[in-house]
Image (cartoon, rainbow, N blue to C red; front, top):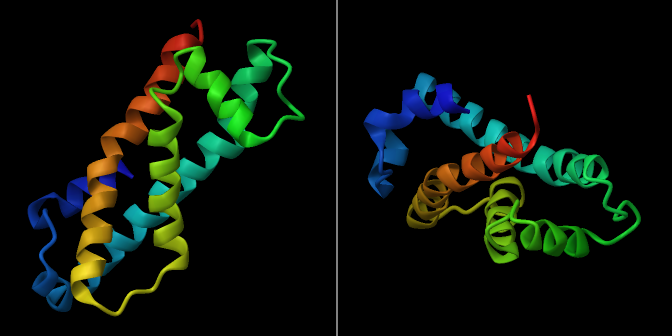
Length: 132
């Protein structure tokens, strides 16, 4: 994801008219970035957070995801459940919405770029908690 983001850096923030001028390489960079962003967000929620709770011996394996997120927030691994839900909403828009309006596409892409730091911070919080 970071590699794709570096390739996109000269073209950020995205302007609506820029979307019609993308060359094949830029389209590939966006595809790579979006795929890796969504996969990382999915992996955190579906694999890493449940594994973290198991590692911490928290009995949450059969609990709903919202309960797991609330517990992780109380333990300091999430800043807030609302931030996580906003990341999930961004991921859902990327995978399920197909807007035709360039202004909406631009907004989605810029929101995703803006949320990379939050996603990385969440990953770093877990990495910092695991002893080497």
